[in-house]
Amino acid sequence: MITFIGSILISLITIFVVMDPFPSILPFLDITHKESREVCIKCALKIVGLAGILAFFFLFTGNSILSALNIGINDFKVAGGIVLGLLGIETVLGIEFWKGSKKHENKDSALLLIATPLLTGPGLITSLIVLQTQFNFTVVAIALSIALILTAILLILSLDLKKVLGEKGLMVLSKIIGLILIAIAVSYLRTGILS
Image (cartoon, rainbow, N blue to C red; front, side):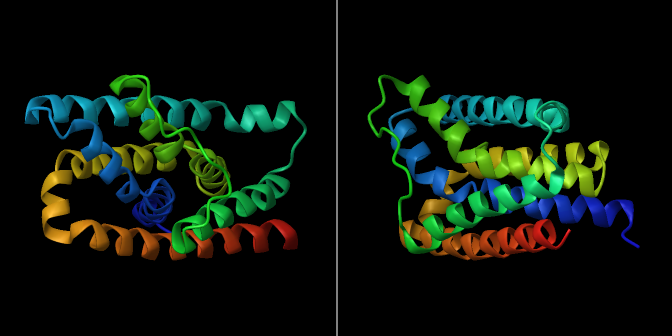
């Protein structure tokens, strides 16, 4: 039987892998490279705050939305598994299944695009709903809060991380996380179909 702490750890790993903040580091540095450290910290907190608001909104309302649309959790696992799988393949192989605009009107709109869909996108929304049915709201809320704090720390320390790992190091780390993401997608598909 999985303990309360074990449930939080499983949820935290899943959420952090799906959020995958490492690809967000380079665009964050591109946006804030001329800013002071204080401004960079404010930008990082703004990004994580926006991502957190959206993530918690779907954590609160996700199951109600599924019920209103008469969608079973196993159907959602299959659909979510497909989305997560595509996101993982995109990360690992560099294949773009959809393209967003890379031109930003201003810094705020660029920060918003890091918050969503880079951090809080369809993959994270799927995972939050599935994890809530697997464990409970409290477990997932705690895990999500920790993941958001870790993401904020990574963004704040992004310049130091780039110096230590380099762009190639960040890409390799992201691809490893992409492989784990594909494994999570396969798990969602398998349990959704078999159930």
